[in-house]
Image (tube, rainbow, N blue to C red; front, side):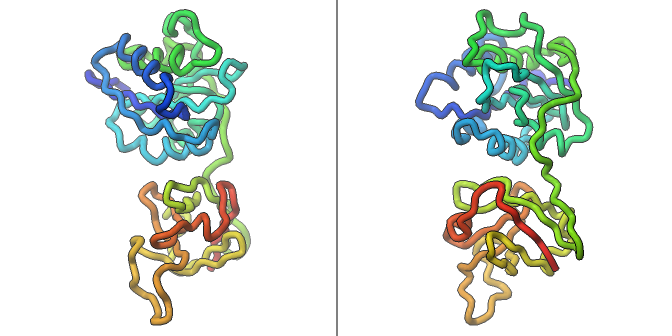
Length: 270
């Protein structure tokens, strides 16, 4: 895979924007390669929430050009024995901690390579044990943007840390058991069901925290198929923009109605 002449580097962190952390990472990158374009995915990931960051990255990495370098830093184990890694997958690069952050990318992209970052000449001088985003991941991303091959950064590994896989579990009688993998800003509950899992979604019903959901909608304000005694403000399922089945309510929070949290079970049956 070849990095473009004017490469893009994205940043996804839990740093927030009130402190100097994001600016420091950008400054290091631009010092090494002033020609890059830096795009902020988000810096508002809940602190130390690896699964949230993993989903956000999965939802948007394919929207960027081929050769984009994604720096993701949600790193509660910074300074410990956890490995810094770089990944090549799906014509993109990923740089960050080996703590499961890139699990969903590795699940989706069967052809991938993972490298343990050990060659210190590509790091910033005097690496802080508490700021690898600035001192390791930013400089490495900048090095990749200038043409450094991943094999020059350290040895390839095959035991990267993985989160629970995204694929739902198949039970008896055609029932599938999945889970809520993310709850967005609006309170929509994103499940791990894809269209490939539910070829006939309209004929299914969902069970979440004791609530049965039978309605499927094309868009949030869709009122087609409602009976006269229905108001269109009940819970329904919808295919979200990230490609997963979401549980929603029009003009409200499905998560609040369901008292739901990430990880809650969702079953789909005939």
